[in-house]
Length: 272
Image (cartoon, rainbow, N blue to C red; front, top):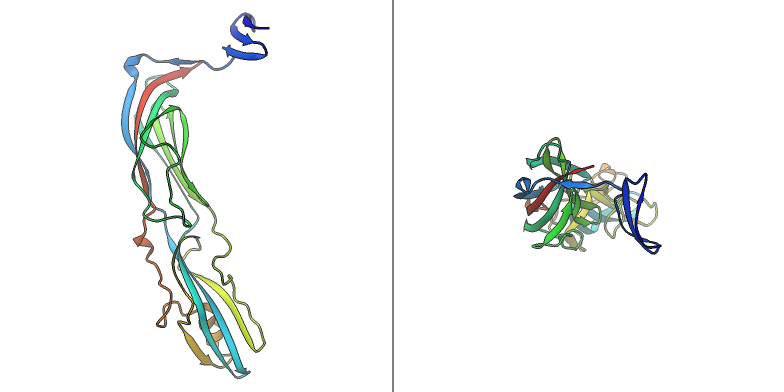
């Protein structure tokens, strides 16, 4: 059956074409307010830099000439910039909304004016929304950037008598290990033993940018097999001693902040 029909006590309209509903008033209607209440606003959507740290990954090898003596040295190392688990959320007001308005209908145009200075796991952090073009927009959310373990989004909505901007970014829990040498000390009471370990600068985080990688030994020590340095110094590595240690990054030298300019035009409305 096709055509127009009244239903629900003749209070609603439905237009059908065969089994397909072409139009219906069976839902929430939106009444746009007068044109004099339309807006055009330009503002920035700012995602701040993440808090950052680093990790030093190294491999150690012990060669035992006897039970009384041993040679312990690093046979390789790598360092990376890390991003610890974190969340950021902030709500700001774009403009006051007319009385009784509870929805915004319009268009938004985005332009990224500041991008992260470095890659995330070998990939550029590119915008997920089209840049420099008008996008139809009804009160809601936009996913702005996302990589493995990281996401940034913004929402625009009417709340408390104002049109609000909500920004949010999150970084997930770090992985359990990183690097080609393993993640924990492995003791072997044989002719030789080897293992690997991650040493965090402060807070464990997700490795996002490798800084350095070396294979020759930056540190070597000869001492008794059961000397204190083998349970402490050699296991944890001299991350900063020797002529060929891996470079430890200064986290403040890297900026993962991102800023967008938004031009928002449209109308306020009320939902029935």
